[in-house]
Length: 383
Image (cartoon, rainbow, N blue to C red; front, side, top):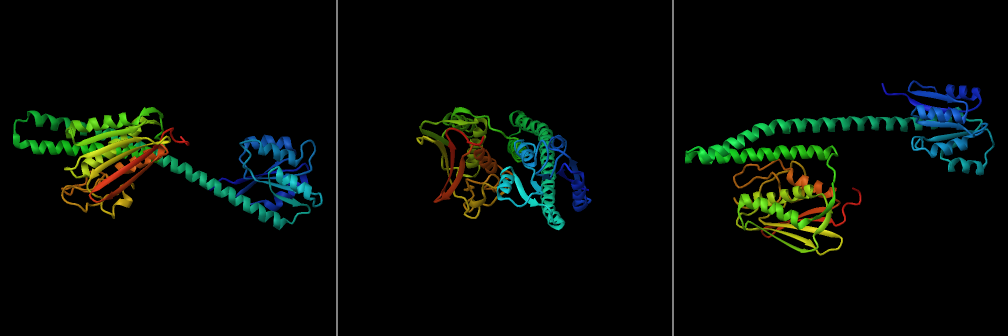
């Protein structure tokens, strides 16, 4: 059963509190009494209340003063306040009540049905808030469990994958059988692709759990892009990628996360772009407020796929030839018809760029695909 909603009733006359009990008593409601403002403040420190019903006329500390103290505390400022008073209707008094934080102001003698109906509204609001808090807690636990599961999975899979990759490399070098080389190369490529998938799944789990945080510092975006290009040139050879820059390319960024963005975009272009057309990377720092990165490759993305390329686990087929002219979907089919991934690379890219307060867009047509990343020079305002 749900926890009862607690209502704080404050009145210096015991019979008035007894009357409130008679009107408001319900199985899912607990009424807590206080006969003074001081006692009410003590109870507010001990309990979580969904509503406070305050009598205006009390000695030492009246209802208005108590309400002002409640509104001044972070712990109690959200509690709705309902004022009860035996004085005649006075617009000035009512104004002071609302100014001190009241959500309603009732004059005695009070119609029990009206009071019960108003209290029911606040009880239901408190119940909804309670349920939302429970759902949020459950969701956070599920996210934490999911991330833990992915971390264990990634750790346990990396060890055998590393052994497979090392063994394939050894056989390729020292196997002695030339006819085995295609098989060992295929084993190594597939194992490396599986390792990338494991890393992407782990990163997505961290993104969903809100556990990827910026570590911003002043860095040269062009230097970061150059380092990623150099890494890919080791595997794909010189001349496959060109890089250029214009203006001031310094920006307040997380270098590790932007390195991953560029790894995803360039790797995507290499896997799915036209192999006969060089990939160009351009870093533009001519704008005083932002730095942009353009990654351009040959090959066009299917128009039906283009609107969805930044969504997770989305893949599609090329409208081009066997060259794999896609340039945009981390996980679309290559020329041989085999999926190159899980469709997470561009999703992760978008999330990391958004975390910086930037944007990433894709355009495709007339035989080429262009990705444009824009980063604020001074970093995200909300980081």
